Amino acid sequence: MYLNYELFFYCLLVFSLFCGLLVFCSTRSHLLLTLLSLEFIVLVIFLTLFYFLVFYGYEGYFSLIFLTFSVCEGALGLSILVSLIRCHGNDNISSLSALMW
Image 1 (spheres, rainbow, N blue to C red):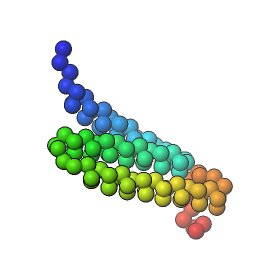
Image 2: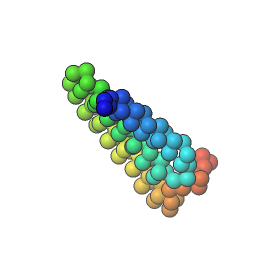
Image 3: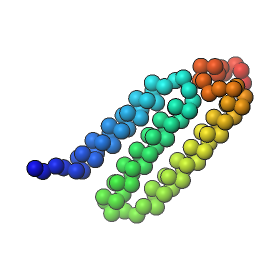
Image 4: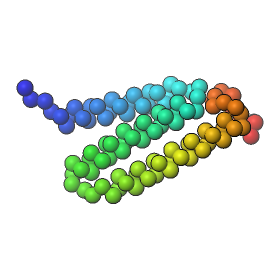
């Protein structure tokens, strides 16, 4: 029985990306859940990029640059979350208003 592992891996990555997008679009109550879904999407994109670079025989330096920027993005999101919790006491997005700032 022949199983095409490459096609299976592509389908798994696309399914993971759509699951991350679904969670990102459906969670609007807490900022932490939104940040976690964004990090999941970034990790799926990193795995896809790394797989394509290895498959076509390129160097992995671009994936390291992408991973560095995604870590900086995650640190920025966590700092915004800590600032929000210190100012408002919770991470509910519904308690925020543009007029409060």
